[in-house]
Length: 226
Ligand code: HEM
Image (cartoon, rainbow, N blue to C red; front, top):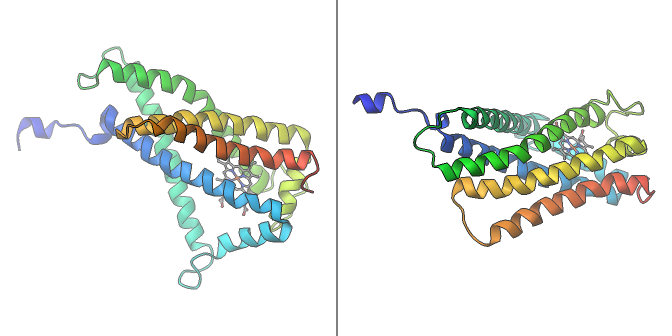
């Protein structure tokens, strides 16, 4: 083995590798937020529809797999994507801040990464804080005083009937929208997928997810769903 091969860095150690990691984990997370929003549209079909759907999520894979195994598998993939996404973002930021940039990254790449990371950091932090609150609120019920285990519909209504909570959900989902828009755009850049459709896709994707998500707290606040 030549000296050059021995010292060759792993793909993740390079800026391009970190960007691939961000892009692929970002794609997994985009898939999740879209499917989660679509699943939650069942709120508009009533309590039975949403609660049946929540129960089905726990049953998928049965009888080949025991109850909740597939769901736990999906949760594991999701959690892994969250860690990779945050770690790659952190790692890219550290790399970008270094006084002496690595030779193989072009100057133009650096400017783009720096601009994106500045907007993405804050919306990303808001989304992470939101998810922590969201789990305490609707999964574990810690911050939802009226939480009833197994009655997802009731829990959503009980949560959004608190006006400050509903407003916080709207704000967090707007931040998610900005993050998704820039994120989708940068992901195409990182993967080398170029085309005029990129901007339209990024706006449409972020728009659909945000409109759906923001509609839930608003629907409860204005009594459309109760
Ligand atoms: C207003 C919009 C949203 C509503 C109404 C909503 C509703 C819910 C509900 C009811 C649950 C509990 C489901 C169950 O126990 O079966 C849940 C879980 C969850 N939500 Fe959301 N959600 C929203 C937005 C989001 C967003 C934007 C994210 C991510 C950025 C997210 C991430 C999660 C995660 C990770 C879980 C836990 C899933 C699991 O462990 O099975 N949610 N959501």
